Length: 334
Image (cartoon, rainbow, N blue to C red; front, side):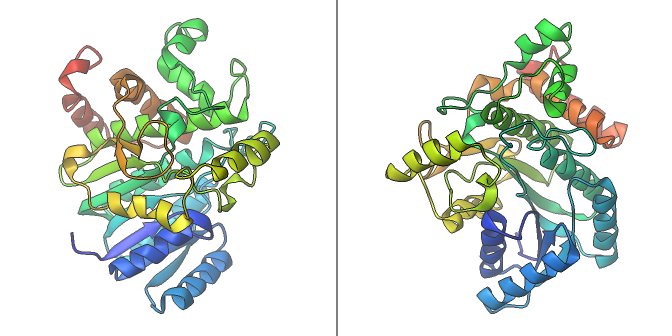
């Protein structure tokens, strides 16, 4: 694919900053970098230009927690009048020690997905993505399970216990950290990343044939600001232990390179979740084949829950198209 325009969220530090720098080196003619304020985005663009000795960075104000900001950013992208070839949805948050909700009542670590959904759907509806666009969103190993100190919710069981089997209502409760959800920071993080993996699979079924989307775990990269909100057990016990084990941590540049690698993946693996091999946090990435990740009922429940919370959906024709493309093994759901 010809490298033209990329958009990266969460570029003011850490993995997003490293990814933007790598995209410039890869030959993109323009890399749109975002910040919650225009001044912060402009500062980041200037710093990246100095680091890379290139003038390809364009600042864009984007606060994913504010729908009005997302709409304003979409308006600026429409004015730009050029299709985006690579959309990197990197912004994320490790949950706080105590439950924190956004102004819209969304649990803090779930909020980036809602903003990313609003942005992605807006780009699709406005036809701002190129016909062969690639979309990558940041995932994480806890979504697959088997990571010490992290446990995702068994959504079907949770739905059966509290929501009469309504899995959409169950996922929405997790997004909002509702009254039936016991807040445990690490588990909230695992749930957020699992819902992302499901959302990606559902989005893949809705994309035009030339486009593709993937969830990609950057792996261990503790030298970033992403853990600034984490509790003391994660900060001062788990991460220091991980840092002592060879192969369990990476530089931000190495972690961000996973995103860039995925930008060249084909449509045949669209909708998949890529992460380290089981028990690892670095090294090659591979498709995660765990059954709970590939359950179409959970995937569609996650999509609908995100739609309900965000208030944004694709046109009904796209939704029907996704149902027509559902895997045969999940035909009962469709």
